[in-house]
Length: 163
Image (cartoon, rainbow, N blue to C red; front, side, top):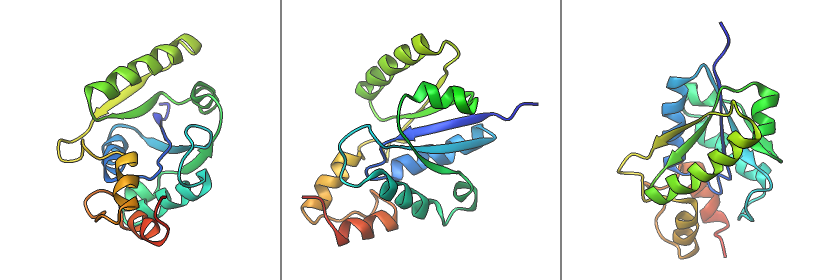
C-alpha cells in the first residue's frame, strides 16, 4: 500500500494556533504530513528559515506533530506535489473569502497538474478570526498574544515586535 503523503504549505508568518489546529487534524487523515514554509510567497516579517524554526519549536511539545518534517520551499507547489508524490495538499479555510481564493488557486494547480488534490479543513469557530496579519498587528501594538499563537511565537514576537 502506498503511503498517503500530504503537504501543508503556507507562509506561517507567524504560525498561529489555527495553523496548529489544522495540522493536528491533518495528521489524523494522512500517513505523513510535511509542513512547507514558503520562502517566496509574501513579504513577511521573518525570513523563511526563522519561520520554519518557529513552526518546529511550536510543534515540539506534541509528539505526533513533532514528527512532521518542516521544510522551506520555493517555487510552484505543483512541482513539490509531483516531486514528493503527495496525494493531497492541506489548506485551512477561515471564511468564505478564504474559500474563494483557495478555489481559484486549486483551479490553477489542477490545470498545471491534473492529479492535484486539495483537502480544505474549515477553521474551528474559536480560531476562525485568527490570521497571521492580525497577530502581527496585535504584537505591533503590544497586545496579549495568548490564545492566538504558540508560546515560542509569542516569545519571539515579544522580543522583536513587528514595526
